[in-house]
Length: 167
Image 1 (tube, helix red, strand yellow):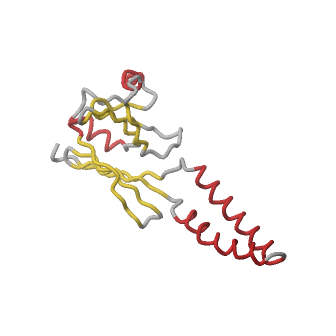
Image 2 (cartoon, rainbow, N blue to C red; image 1 turned 90 degrees about the vertical axis):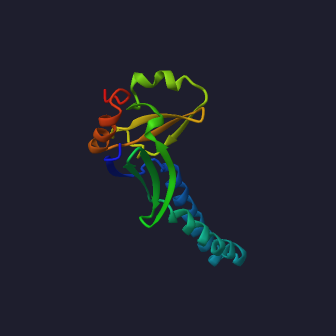
Image 3 (cartoon, rainbow, N blue to C red; image 1 turned 45 degrees about the vertical axis):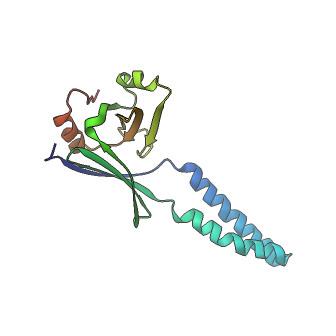
């Protein structure tokens, strides 16, 4: 698979709880600052301490996943705030057992395995086409959820047509 190359960037939309937490922290900080300024200096100092906590909660809210298919490997990285990149995982496509949409019945036999580890690198948006890739490496079974483009699907299907399904 030496001539294969595809790159995909997907915005992470599934962190709703994190956004709610950030809003709550900001509101608590504002209440502490206002009440402390009006009534109690100790509460105001607590509000001052909460400022960096609130800022750090907002700091890493924007995330993107980047898939890089090169040769026989799928590299997955996370990009935070469009500036910090961290490599999360590398998967060898030669170890892939199956690739199908997440709701496909072809994945049922894998989902019944209690030792299946799930890694979700998709946007979480139900309207997008999310695929599950099942990898068996070193005796461990892993499900990797991704949102491939048509070009990436074509490249994987070109070399692994018997285990890639798009039903």
